[in-house]
Structures are given as structure tokens and as C-alpha cells.
Length: 232
Length: 233
Image 1 (cartoon, rainbow over the protein chains, first blue to last red):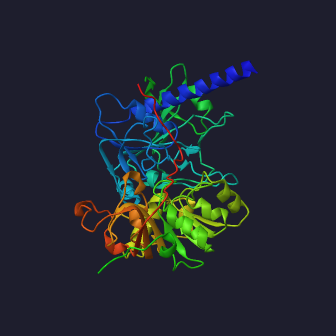
Image 2 (cartoon, helix red, strand yellow):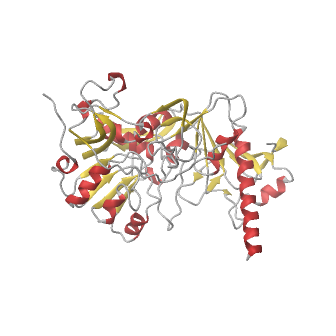
């Protein structure tokens, strides 16, 4: 029993470090002055690794620019939440607006970059991340709007499913969130660019070979001429 | 004399009828017209179509009207976090139309602004575009979406005056201002009714022209769905 728990904890820590590696690598894509929308889960962690000296403004599609950290205990405000419905705080420079203005901002491509998770991505940059037929009914929320119009869409996800099946496919089989919308995929194993010529492997995690990545990826990866090791 | 004040939520929804389409403000349990929902619960109005970003939770928001089977159809962008809703959907007791969140907001904005339809890039090549006109502009594909109006709009604001001028607080604004523009009868519940002239004109979010009735709500619960905090250093 005790051993089982310890194993579980190790596994959980493994998951945490994977998520952190992914978030730190995605954070390297931020630029000073960017307005960025971060999805729920691992993408949210990117906000913890904004490079020193940069001003990056986080957008929340429920109507806020300039998301601050979680509130101190006892200072939660029910009128102040992010799109994940978590209590947050404001920072100097924060602004609030309506949902209509929020999505005008998103569709109008004023938000520079969006980071979100995925169930499947394919070699054409199609994304599926909102529905599994026959399973729970949830809804797409703002994901379809974000991926359709964001100038840069980065997927932050674990490379394969829990039982080792590829999530990067030749063709998505789940209902699509958007068609040809993904620019880059960052996983705990690799950084992959989606290009008109197919998927290009740009970086591999320390100790990971291109062959390791290919084994867990359905379409054939082109290996970049200056393949690098992920450094975070 | 313009005085849109009514005594309470029960008076405000006197004209509500079975089968009405209600636009209800709120994002999750934030900025939800709690008093109006409670009044509909008391009145027992049935076969409602509710347009709202979410379907509430088990014990808050529109979730309360789901439990009593007063809602026939939900138009929303995200309906997770509500087991009652899920069960009713699986049993075929409730109809659901999922809209991308930005499309939902823009459909309401368009209707309120006298625009019957518009083209958006959102949802092209997905199930959302099925059966809808897709047209190319400047080399990019867009799907046609229709404006969406309500018979009633239930608005939750922070402060308002007898003319119906409203201001919202923080992210409790969300869908409220846009919904206030797109229904035949718009009811605003506020935490405080203030004297005419005491709201800063530059800071009015919803000008009174859009509002038909206003009242001061009572006993706000303001549930928090996900209480996230940080430790003091």
C-alpha cells in the first residue's frame, strides 16, 4: 500500500516535471510586448516562466487583459476569475471588457499568440481538442475562435497518450477544433514545426533521439538540418 | 419621467411566458443574474430556451432551472461541470446547441446591432460549419452565422440608475453588456441602485436605452467555482 502510494507520487512528480519542461520551452516563444492567451492546464503554467525583463500581457477570453497571480487566501473575489473559472487578481495596467469585445480582439488577431492543449494534432496542422464522441459532452468554449484567428498557435501537450499511442497523427480522427491552424507543437520529447512540407523536428529533449520521437509519432518527421537539444 | 425601477425580480418577470427565449449573462457562476433565476424557479415557467455561455453548476446559475426541468433547450459554448445537464442530455430530455464562444457573443452582438448574419473564420472545416454557407473572402474561408435575439435578457450589473444606465464589476461583465442589447425585454438586476447622475458618464458600460426594467437584487451568493490561492511569502 505504502509502496503503491510512493510510486503514484513519483509518477505524479514525473508528470509535473514534464509539464514544467513543456511550459518552460513554450515560454521561450514569448516576445516582449506580446498579448497571449493561455489555455487551461499545462498552457496556464507558461505564465510562470515569462522571461525576465519582458512585459507580456495575458488575455482571458471572459474579458480581461493583464491577469495577475492567484489571490492570497481570504482575498478571493467572486467577480474576478479567469477563463478556467479560477480566482485571479488584477495588476497595474489590467483592463476589463465584454465577451463580444474579447472575441473581437481575438478574431481581429490583436492577441499575438495562443497556447492550448490537444487530444490530436495532424501533419496538416489540424487540431482536435474539444470532443470525444460518445464520451462526456463539454463544448468547445473559446478554443475554435482562438485557433481560427490567432497569428501563432502553439500546442503544449504530452507527446503520446497514457497508453503510448501517438497523438500526432497523419489525420485527426476526433472532431476538429480548427483546420490547418497549428504552427508549433511542444511536448516533453520534442519541438515540432508545422510547415507546408509537413512536420519538421526542430529540437529533442535531453537524452531523447529523433528515432525515439518518431516511434511515438505517426507521420514521418523531417529532421531539421540544425537539430537542437531543448534547453530550458 | 423615465423610471425603469421595479420592486423585485418577481415583478420584473411578470411578462415571462412558457417557451420564451432568455439570454442570461454570466461566465460560470461569475456575473450571473441570481435573483432573476430564483424568480423563474418560483414562477415555474416551462419550455424555456436559455442562451448563456454555460449551464451553471448543480446548485447555482441556470443549473437550478435544469433540476426542475424548466429548460427545454440550451444554447451555450461550454456545458462541462454540470452532472444534471449531462444526465438530461444523455436521456434526451434537453436539446443543446453548442456555439463557439466568440460566435455566440458575436451572434448576440449582431442581433442587437441590427445585423441579421455575418461571416466568421471560426469553425470552418469543423462540425460547426455543417449545413451553413461557407464563402471565401480575400482567399480565406468564412462561415455564415445568424444573429441571435432573445425575448428576454437577464442582466447582472454592479450599479445602475433609474434610467437603466449600468456599470459592471471586474470579470462579472462578460456576456452581460452584449446580451443587454439583444432582447425584446431587458431586465437588469444590480447590487446597488444609485441616484441618477451619480454614475460617471464616461464610465457607463450599458447606456440606459437598452434596458427596460431594473431592480436592486438581494442575498447575492456569488459562488466561486474554483477557489485558487497562493501562500503568503
